Length: 184
Image 1 (cartoon, one colour):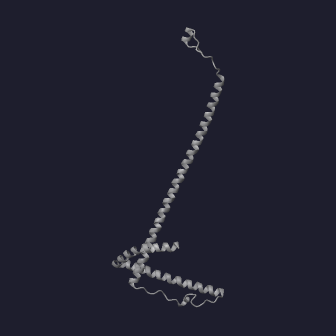
Image 2 (tube, rainbow, N blue to C red; image 1 turned 60 degrees about the vertical axis):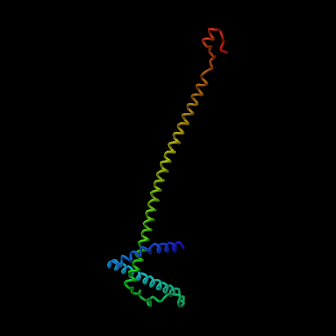
Image 3 (cartoon, one colour; image 1 turned 30 degrees about the vertical axis):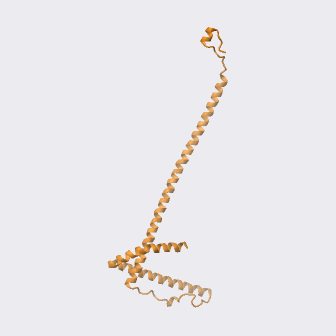
């Protein structure tokens, strides 16, 4: 189904290109000759494909010993008609259609190639960003570990100092000493 949809899209997109090519072919004898050669080549290709298919069907039927029903197989390979000779106008039109389809397909392939390159570049950028972030996380984890160790050492030192210092009695202020008052 998707293949048919893609084929339809190519056919629809190739039509305007084909029309422009036909207009160019009408003005250029060398382009008209190229279109004619392409159409003749395509007609021969189709004929040869049909001959091979019929021959393959006949060989398969002979090898399996199955009787082929009339109309089931195509015309015997030796009775196939060669491709019809196309008029110059038909050949030019068919060649232009083939050129138009080839153009549309090549543009589509080029777009797919560009998209693949962009996706690959984006993946590489994302991989580089992940590596940078992983390195930053590793550095931050190492720094946090060092700070925890330093904090623990400072806490132990503070605790040790707190135990070594004995509480001293509160001293009286100078005024209280003169006046004989106690600060308590």
